[in-house]
Amino acid sequence: MGLSIVVASGKGGVGKTSVVAGLASCLAALGSKTICVDGDAGLRNLDLALGLQEQAVFDFNDVLLGRAALRDALVSRSDIPRLQLLAAPAHTPASAIDPTAFAALIGTMTELADFVLVDCTAGLDTGFALAASACTGAIVVTTPNQMALRDSARCAERLTNHSPVKLIVNRVQPRLIRLRHAYNIDEAMDTVGLPLLGIVPEDEMVSAAQNHNIPLVLASQKGAGSALCNIAERLMGRECPIPRRFREWKVEG
Ligand SMILES: Nc1ncnc2c1ncn2[C@@H]1O[C@H](COP(=O)(O)OP(=O)(O)O)[C@@H](O)[C@H]1O
Ligand SMILES: [Mg+2]
Image (tube, rainbow, N blue to C red; front, side, top):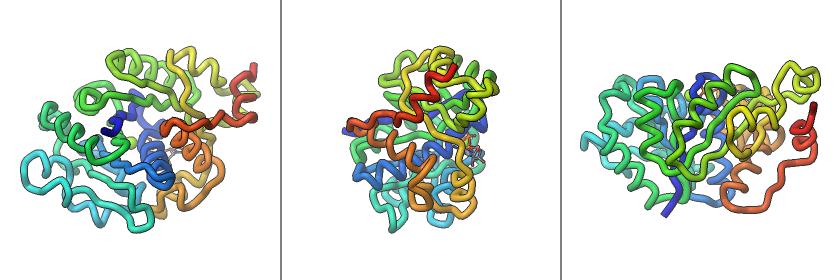
């Protein structure tokens, strides 16, 4: 029985889709069977980040409505065979999805995979409730700035029934922390009120890989690619301390 994890933030644009695509690819590359579900009904783009836009003919609403079998809607790349994607409907809003049926579908997928990661829509309304109520665990993604942190704190307050619930601080730039132009990692954890799962540095390879429709782990094993693989190791229960230079960012005053 696998673990279902909603990846949420409240605020849009902080890197939820990038984290889901990168983390799912790393989990699969490290040997865990991983299904990632695009929970952003109406505004999907996880298929693009994984280079699966041509294969993703069916979406989760097709499965819920009996128009496609789950095995036909799950698509994968030959170079990361343990990774599968279930796309979101491109034109159906979250308000039109039956939450009970969606939760049952996520439950079915936890029987097929070690990890089911659900990429959540921005905001804390219907789309968030749909994805959050279907999962047992949660990852809150934030960037180290005041607005994202406040929204992430609101998001974390809504995840009290989930376990584990952990924080990823994305797009971290040590230079900005040193200049006090960005919050440090301790401040981020205190503001959101969650334990740290990992830190992902600002890395131009994230958007470069996305624009080439290549999973980050295949494009770069440094920077954000390396950080996401370390996070994947931690999720798999392996010892993987946060690197020393990251810890230094954490205590930067
Ligand atoms: N660690 C990172 N370094 C550099 N750019 C990033 C990083 N994470 C995300 N991005 C970029 O930020 C933008 C928003 O990311 P996205 O994953 O779409 O956010 P969300 O899903 O939360 O709306 C994208 O252009 C993406 O390439
Ligand atoms: Mg997104």
